[in-house]
Length: 38
Image (cartoon, rainbow, N blue to C red; front, side, top):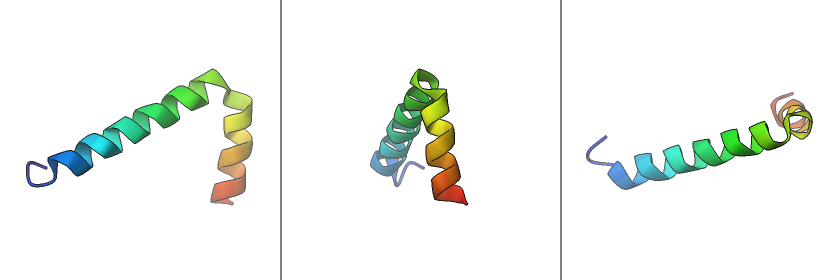
C-alpha cells in the first residue's frame, strides 16, 4: 500500500463517495446496481 498510496487514497475516496450516494438514495442505488451487475 505504501508504494501506491495515491492510488489507495483515490480508491477509498471513490468508495466513500459511492457509499454516500447509496445512502442518499437507496432506491436509485438498487436500480443502478441491478443494471450494472446483472
